[in-house]
Length: 249
Length: 251
Image (cartoon, rainbow over all chains, first blue to last red; front, side, top):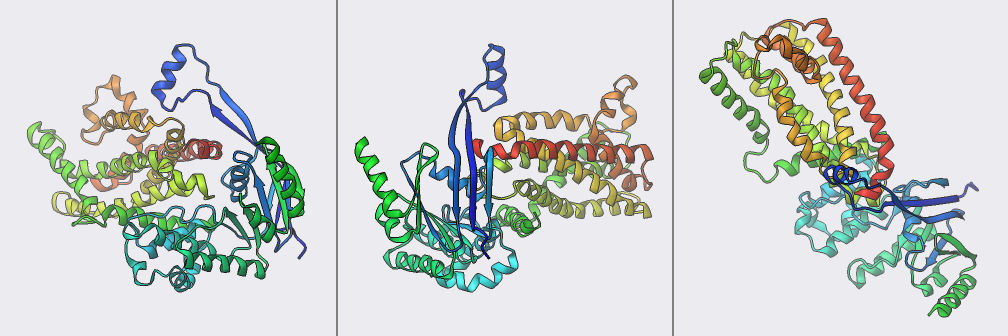
């Protein structure tokens, strides 16, 4: 298969934020009666971005805060629809951006595992098969049947990570280094991500840690003000980015 | 979409367990509202005001259950996208699933609330006739109608946070404009059009007639019920699908 795992072609996202903080019918009616106009701030969070990745590559995304990295991840995850351009994704995507999305504190760890798994697009049957693995990896053991509100934040994060990485993704989106749990669990996470890489899972890594980019990535894109400023080999792009940042400082 | 059937099941399961898990009588809560309302209205209208309605309790409860289902679902639906804001902002799910889960939870609650209705009909009414088999049709109509209204309210509330409050205030007069408590024949002729403009009148009538009168409702009542249900669903679906891509910016 020579199909690209990720193909982003000419994607633009325009945010359209109301200038007035009107969030109720009452305010809206009053504002309109006073003759106010309802208009928007517009700005391009992404403008004509092209990014491609073959299967099994590790792609790095770097850039300053507000450069559009998070927007790009949201477009990839399907949360935001771009106003132009196309996003093609071949395979199941696991966003390690938001671990444990939709966790409910009143439900048990097990119930939350089903809920979170189906949010990520698995079936309940698949989740039943993976349950033992998830419990083992998250080290929750007998706590899996306790309500989530009794968990420590580390336990919640461990469970979220275990579910997100146990759904056999083809594409992994990693935002920042995984700061989940204690040192031992972090090492386990790093090992798992490395294992994915060996299995040929495509990884999209978003980070400010330029050293990590140099070590892990096959290819790097540098985003600046919503456009790709440079892309290429990690060493070259990182050098350009460093120079750019030094000039601005 | 069918990939997310499991999600729908899990959301309904969550709705029901979280609501009842920490209460002693659990599912009995579902029955409490219709039972108390029936007791109060029967006392007030049948005993104090002496409405001439025969078997008032059957007349009232059979209509009130439909109303209660509709009101409960639509009130819940107002908040359902906002409540799932964290989810909507972070991860892709078909957002219609959130609205559908509210209505499905409502259907299950409605199912439980039928238990007191059965007892009421057996004790105070004339028992059941074969025409109760027809009841499946009005139930489908009211569910479809409710889904449509829920989709509209869920979309609007994302952009205007107080839609739910307005809607709550509207529900009371709307209920009194629906012949749930009073019989149709006490309405003066010149106000009859007000009732006939109300879609809930047809849906309520469609469900009540087979239980209260033991006959199939008038064909025009059935036809209008089906029409308002479909119209509501179509409008709701169009509104929702046009709005849903913008939810992420407002939740």
